[in-house]
Amino acid sequence: MKPASGAPRRHMPTSPFKPPAPAPPAERFSVDDRVTHDRYGLGVVIGVEDEVAVLVDFGSRQERITTPFNKLYKL
Image (tube, rainbow, N blue to C red; front, side, top):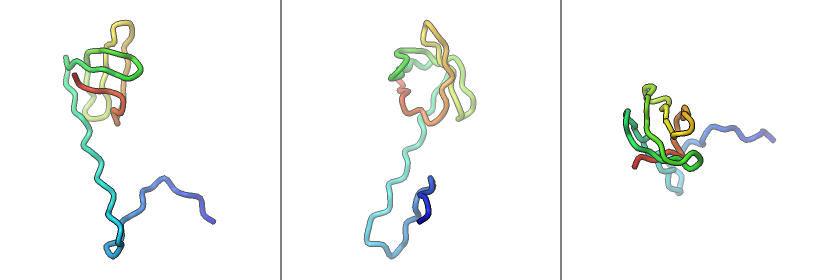
């Protein structure tokens, strides 16, 4: 038996099951946005690297957070 791969299964047009919902678009951040993170708390965006990562100042530390921004929310 083959091990499961990390790739999502493709939807067959003749399948009676609904296709999976598309992933929501990644949230866009800009410099000076106020944000909150589940682990680090409140912070301010101080840098944006295209759509790859954001640099956030959380007061006591600065963190580079990469996409997907699962735990980072704009306030």
